[in-house]
Image (cartoon, rainbow, N blue to C red; front, side, top):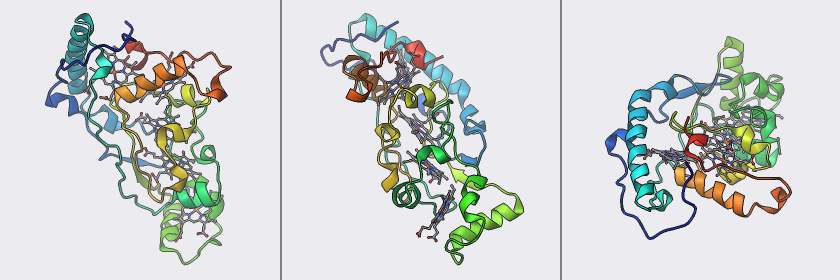
Length: 234
Ligand code: HEC
Ligand code: HEC
Ligand code: HEC
Ligand code: HEC
Ligand code: HEC
């Protein structure tokens, strides 16, 4: 099934599904360094989310059949701006901005796998193990203490798609979509904040736009960013 590509008159139905659609847990979960970020938290609420998706799919189908364009109704922009406090005052502005460390030095999964990943502590310790950088800093002491105890830093997850959506970093990064297109200017952030909604309309609108009119650096690549439901929901 394809999303209708033409825009039709504003459509006020279907009503987005009720409270159940927020039944999945949102990021109260913590990610430990190096762990698969896809952990238990994403499994929570799966059944409820699936059910919500099934019901909502039915109403989306009704919408298609009645000539409404599903994308014309905007889902609420929850979690744009979400910026939880982290256990260590790690700054992207210092590391990715001032020191110009490449994103993929730390997020080394981004090009080849589904997850960009959060770097394990040993990546930080490549520089901080020697205790030469700001030796009196209490924030760096948290790193060296954890390292000496063999513990991980329990970073708080910022971005989180519901688990009925399938998203793969490598499909985007290897085709030349810059991190900043989706995450904003991370290299200016002291504390990471979610720059976009991650709502379905955001994904689908970009896919349509890139199919129709890819940015210059991608113009020679044959871009076919799918708008099939199944591409993102399986
Ligand atoms: C020196 C290592 C390092 C570099 C370089 C780095 N990051 Fe990070 N990044 C981290 C750590 C550690 C976290 C988890 C703590 C936090 O959220 O601040 C993180 C978190 C993130 C998150 C949020 C993850 C979540 O929980 O949803 C995004 C997005 C991100 N980085 C993107 C980038 C981008 C884009 C760049 C390059 C401009 C970059 N990072 C460079 C170490 C790094
Ligand atoms: C390539 C080397 C390098 C890597 C890798 C690196 N850092 Fe740093 N970090 C630095 C330097 C240099 C500074 C000092 C910058 C300055 O002068 O303010 C610093 C500063 C810091 C500070 C601020 C200390 C303070 O009190 O101002 C923290 C916290 C920190 N790093 C945490 C981390 C974490 C966590 C990681 C891993 C995700 C990491 N660093 C990876 C080089 C590095
Ligand atoms: C097309 C949009 C897009 C691009 C491009 C993109 N990301 Fe992401 N990123 C996301 C989404 C969506 C999530 C949430 C994924 C989830 O919850 O499963 C995410 C999550 C993350 C996370 C949290 C951990 C993880 O792997 O889920 C990090 C770190 C991250 N991105 C870093 C990066 C870096 C670094 C780049 C560039 C090399 C990048 N991203 C490029 C959309 C994007
Ligand atoms: C490019 C990726 C993408 C495509 C294509 C896509 N979706 Fe989604 N969909 C998402 C994302 C991301 C979410 C979760 C964020 C949200 O709720 O907006 C989502 C959420 C949903 C939800 C739950 C809505 C809610 O309020 O929580 C339903 C129902 C849904 N999609 C149905 C469909 C149908 C039907 C199609 C095909 C016509 C489709 N999707 C195509 C990415 C996509
Ligand atoms: C900035 C634009 C942009 C955004 C935002 C974006 N995508 Fe994509 N997406 C692309 C491009 C470009 C491709 C690669 C197309 C290709 O390989 O030809 C792609 C490919 C994909 C594919 C593989 C499609 C296939 O044909 O197999 C999936 C799945 C996908 N994206 C899901 C998502 C989801 C889910 C989101 C939102 C959370 C999202 N994308 C947000 C641009 C984007």
